[in-house]
Length: 112
Image (cartoon, rainbow, N blue to C red):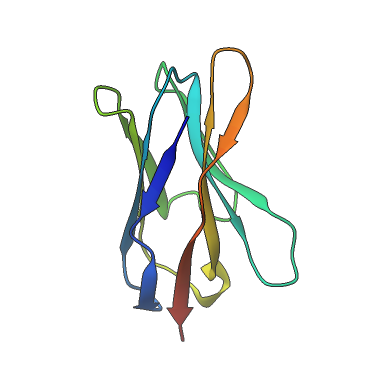
């Protein structure tokens, strides 16, 4: 299984940014996690093969996760970004056997 994430960068507070992650192999769910400097990795959002979504409270109403099943690609639309959203964002794929695969992170920096 390979995961290729893209879309990170520098954005001003209040601005939008979209991340994408293309995966290979069978997929039960896909999601995004993030890790800020000095902090543990935390869940941002996940989406199941059936379309069920789950969000961290800190991003509800601002971030939207979506998925293109045919392309096996997951997207994270991030709006109203805040400096505290600055982190390395990681894509994760969970296969039907319950095994997790992680992609390389993409850095999101939100300037105030």
